[in-house]
Length: 99
Length: 158
Image (tube, rainbow over all chains, first blue to last red; front, top):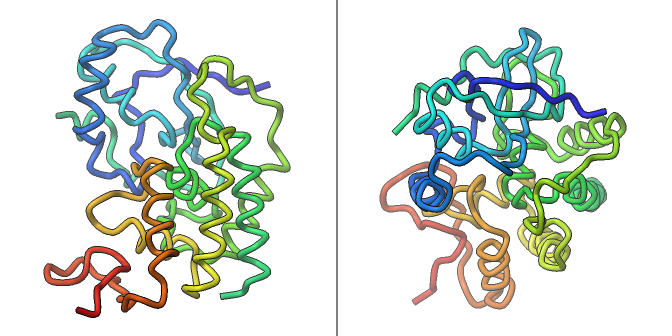
């Protein structure tokens, strides 16, 4: 069974290739299209480190949209990989890169 | 570049595409790089083909069947374009024998796009352009973030 969690998207860590946060060119159209709706939003895919920190691998734009427009709203994430040797604490969180 | 390892890696990436169908190819390569064991997650250009290959195999060995119904029709990994892209990337990789797949994708994409963000259609178009023009153009490797450097693998001889 997949591991699904409910988390505040602001707390999620950004992947090393996306340290600057969501791409504005994707975020704006997504906001225009979905606004504050999360109904039907697919789960974000995350990896989990040894301390339980979660890094987004798919859904940086969705996480940013919800974090920006719906503060406090939890979203569903699926843990796609556990990385018991990893430490994501040096990676910025979604909330650190909100536009 | 070890061509056997690269071939195996491309096959594993194709299989991983099925598991993570909504991911773009470049995003998938980024994901595969972060699967490599280590204290901090890696970027693709820093990961050897062998390490990426082993990480994907290890990851896939632990995967359980996934429910992708929530993604609806947004499943590019199942489209023919992904297989076409994998095939072409293999050919380009053989032509342009960079040590690491992540370097190759990085250089194809160039600084105007990001490996994480580029759509399969865009990446395929760039790879096709390179493939069609191979031999006609000078290939310039740009590994830094320098201002005057060529922004992709292409540099006209003119």
